[in-house]
Length: 269
Image (cartoon, rainbow, N blue to C red):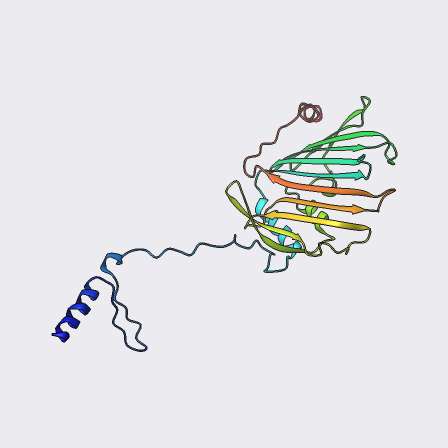
């Protein structure tokens, strides 16, 4: 009677899918028929794919900037770069901003420089705008007090122009620093790699202290935002410098042709 009960119990367990018959070293398993054909869920990635130049603990800035340039090459894009220097008493000593809108081969760049009285360039502002394509460049400068000039040029050296992707400009900003990965950040449904200064808290750049560096980078290597802030004694008095870089409207940027640029092109034709 006991043997009959034992057989019945074992049979019930197998039919219910609760039992498995194995022998040492045998990987054969009994699978619940109700689960057959159910797809195995893919593992959820814990972090965004590493951008080019970004390793587990180190960052090759040159490779990262090259990837940034390549990813944005031949795409329309808006790039901004600003630099503010503020003295300890709150006076903004220098405030510069550059905005580039590009849809190759057309590009429009406008820049602004505001200074305080004791700067070498004097008290006031200097506004400059450039519209260009692959053959000509038209530059408008406004030094204040009604002083406006428009220059038509067919041979403007590239080094005088803000790059369409901002690659050279952000490379110069990041030059003094060593970066390291610091996890990921999700903004508006997009996950970015976060990079920071590896020497945070230690003075490794002469005349600069309290350094803070943060970048948000896409898996393709586009540097969406970069913020660098530090105290410095490089100038006449101690000040804090803050640099901000941003990429916006990728593949959604249009390039206006200002009236003054159109007039200059018409006059030269």
